[in-house]
Structures are given as structure tokens and as C-alpha cells.
Image (tube, rainbow, N blue to C red; front, side, top):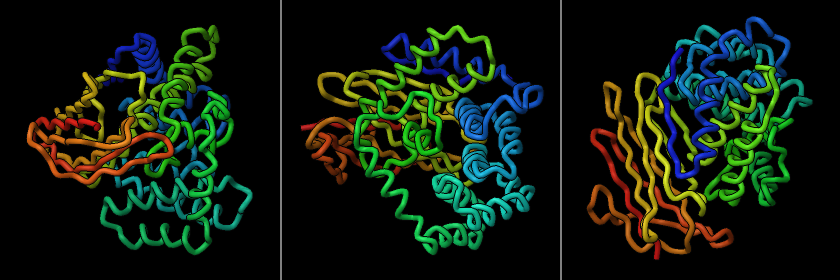
Amino acid sequence: MKTFLTLETDVTQLNTGFEQSKNILAASSDVLTLKPNTLTELEVLQVTLGWLTVGNHLLARSGVESLINKPAFGWACGSYVLWTGDDYILNELNGPIEVWKNELAKDRSHPVIYKELGSRALARAYHGCRNTSAAQDLEDSLIFQGEKSSLDNFEREQTGPLFEIPPLPSTPDQLAAILGLTRQGGNPNVDQLYLLCKQLNTLHSDSDTKELSDRLILASLIACSFFLGMMGTLPDASSGQLTLEPNIPNNLNYFRFRDLRMGLDAVDFAYMEEDGQHTFVIEQNRGRVPLNLIFKPNLSGVEIEQIYIDGELAQLEWWAHAEVGRVATQVQLYLDQKRTVTIVPA
């Protein structure tokens, strides 16, 4: 399956690494069929997220099915629905979903983050297909068992250098931190995450491994750490909504990606910084109905002086994360045309 997603930055290392990673993810169709026992549960989850990120939805479906009866199943299944809009899978796999819920509620030895992120993803997927009762049941289970706060505690523990986390995660908690899925508000490790992306690309270019499974895991992390971590990509294809929370590192002045797939839709995005002015351009290039974009840029600075939407001065709220020297804002836009957001920090 050919994937059309492209990434262009002002760092050659990132461009080359992503292109190689995308090609590996596109050419890995036999890995779960021919070598089902070569990947651990965590690795299958990583690969499934990688396939979703580069738009290989067919392989992502095979990844979800291979995780049935595993603790990572909920996270993979919910993510699949959010990226593809294929909410029919929620009915097809209703039995495995119920087994997953009951097993993680009964056996507390499984990593808590599998239940938390799985329940969150599945709840959003059920909301997207208007199954409010199923969504509420998942949300209530987290609150009832007092597990909603444990993710917040984990988030607070991640304020140290990101390099305390191995480049190749060995636990679901480490994977979640690398992918930015435990972030609330500003990410205190934006520049460390950028360095991690470069480090992953270095590992990729220096690697002499011939095993497809090893190259596949690294390729998935390279793609996901950029789009899920740095870009804060959170799709909801069933609802026609896309959240982008780009966390712009100090050392990256330009990047552009084209054809990020979300269901039947696709989005182009560009960012450039010039003379202290940050400009974002977002355009939906495919789809029947304009997407609803929730845009939350996060930049270096202590104050925002002006914000322009499509060239017009906008009165938007902004907030500062003084402890990490970053500022952020939020705007909701419909992608019925090319949209431009320009931010001028004080």
C-alpha cells in the first residue's frame, strides 16, 4: 500500500529518517502474518500506532486484531477508530472489548496506563458514533476506581529530562511519555522531545540490523514521536474533528507535512518562524465536509502580544507556563478554506 504522507523540515536528518520510516511501515504487511511471535505486545501496539500515523489503515486493523485478549487492545482499538472513523469495529469487536474491560478491572497487575489510555480512546470513539452510554460507562469506571488521578500523578513525575526515558521504550508508561499522551497543558519537555526525535533518527541511520521487526519498531517511534508527540495530533474521524497541539521546539524554525490522513479526509500543515513571528498554515486537501479543527499551539515565550487569524487581528485568550517559559493559545476553526494563524510573542 502506497502512503503519500510527506514531511519536510529544515533538518535533513529528520526528513531522511521519516521517509525511510514511512517506507518501512508501508512495506511491512507480512510481519504479523509470517512472524506473529517476533513482536511483544508493546511492540505490536507501537507498530499499530505507526501504521495509523502514516495512513496504512489496513495494516493497523491487523494490529488491532492481533492484540485481542491483550491489555494493550483497548488503546489500539480506540486509536484505530479515532484515526480511521471505522466505528463499525466497535460492534464487530464488542465481545473482545467487554472482555478487555472486565479483565483489566479484575486483574490489577496489568499496567494502569493501558486501562487509562485505552478507556480514554474507546470513550472518545464511542462518543464519535453517538453511543453515549458506552462512553460514559468507560469514563465512570476510571472515576469509580480512583484511577483518573494516577495518570495525573504520572504526568507530574515526567518533569525531569526526557532522556531518563530510554529511546526505545520498554514499558507502556515510557511509550506514553515519549508520544506526549500524558501531557496536560504545556509539555515541559518540548526541546528534549525534539532531541529525542533526532536521536531516534540517528539510531535509524546508524543501525545495521537486518531484522524487519527491529527496524519496524524504530520506524514507528520516529513517525509517532513527531506526529503524536511534537504535533500533538489527536484525531476523531467519526466526529469530523481534529486537534493539533504543536509543541514548537526552539531549534526548529520550519516544517511542513502533506496528506496526513484521518478517515476519508487529509490535511496539509506548515509552520515557519521568522523575525520572532510564528505562522501556521492549515488546509484540508481532501474530504466531503470541512473538518472542525481545535488548534492549540505551544511556543517559547512569556507573553503573546498579537494573534492574527487569516490576516485579521483576533482577540484570543492565551496563557503562560512560566515555569518552563512557554505560552499557548487555542482557537477553533473550520477547514472550509486555507486557514492561517500568526502569533507574535511580546
